[in-house]
Amino acid sequence: MTGYTLREFIDECRRGIAESENPAQCVRKTVPPMFKLLNGDIGFLEPKHFRSDPGHYARNAIFIDENDTMSLFALVWLPGQGTPIHDHGTWGVVGIVEGVMSESNFIRVDGQGNAANSGIELVEGGDILLASGSVTSFVPNPDHIHIARNPDDSQRVVSLHLYGHAMAGFNIYDKEARTRQWFETEYNES
Ligand SMILES: [Fe+2]
Image 1 (cartoon, rainbow, N blue to C red):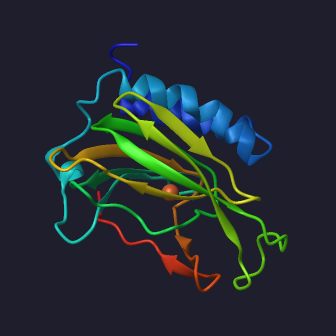
Image 2: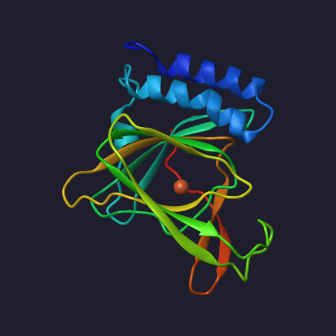
Image 3: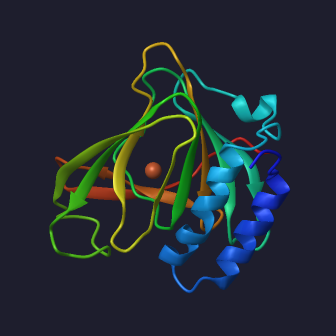
């Protein structure tokens, strides 16, 4: 796997997405390339991709496809930084470059499907720890709802996130208020 490059990754993902008929197939086609990318030559990651922010985890764009079919970001999580409860509205593949990321899952059980933004009932699901070199993924409908965070008190986490479009935004959930709200994604340009 050594020597697998960002260009090869993008090309393989593009082909896989083009051949896919649904989000699950997109994920199935792009998880192996993500694993190869993580475990190959990550020299494509430049200092700008490791930018962090003391206020919250940082999202650094690596590649955003002009046709809106995929986007790749490097996220940098300082110790203790994490997300609120959220979903993505699209499929995604996440690979860990450095550190250990924790993921806490939630399951929506109010039976309204994905359309309703209120009356949402979430129950807590399991936790996962993802070490360097690991790959995970998710598909929408029903949405994958979770918290991702860096649980360590000294080491940063760097992760690669491939999404099934330009990653326009995501829903953030308020578990107690039983609501969710759509937010536009903000990121540092590549
Ligand atoms: Fe997420």
